[in-house]
Image (cartoon, rainbow, N blue to C red; front, side):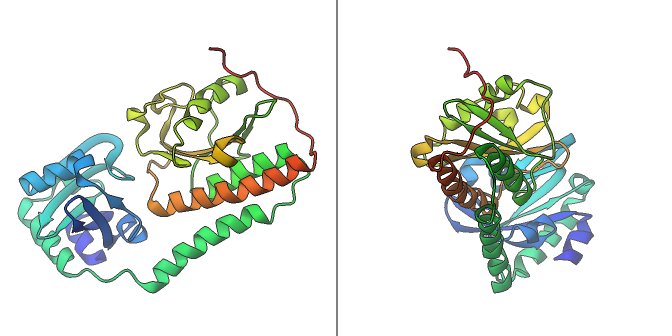
Length: 295
């Protein structure tokens, strides 16, 4: 796959296989296409650009800055080709300018060269989920606030995000930001007010925005205009009654959330819930508090 990607000058190569009329799965590739194999599962009807590829047989995108191409994949340029039961996507600078004959030939070769997702890859993914849970379970925080900050930091690291936060509803309501990474130039009250609506969207315990420029909750200072490109939230506590954990990618390394990222977040949320509940039941001290947003 590396040699095929090189023919087109692609940094990333995705081989998306149609397993049902409205389901495409990334089965092989190069770059992120290899790293995300088995972890992208898409409905092409919900992906405008993939529909264009299916309709026209080939389609190109080119932007002056990274934008979402499909699913969790962001790039400045990409070209996609439909070949049999596959959609093959080449991404990276220069790919939108590759000749149609070259791209079609490379796509056909990529589709015919697909390997099964190795067992070692699946085991590595499972290990990543387990390690994320252990990182939380092994914490020995002295307070709820210390635990919440550590959880936000651990979640951001596990998902390679630049932003992490835990909002605990209390009372009192408290905000806890990851120790490292991107932070908005805003007060805790403003950040909490922007996070709170996400908690109301967690119908199944998890909420993902692969492109915050299309967000249903465009509340500053945590918007696309502020520098965040994608975010994922999980609830804490039964029915989300304890709070919400949020991580986000910024323009520093634009990308969305694969299925593996989402598994990691669900697992961290479940484990964090137990850690925080034990502290709260033990009467651990909580510091400060932020004013809830006014209606």
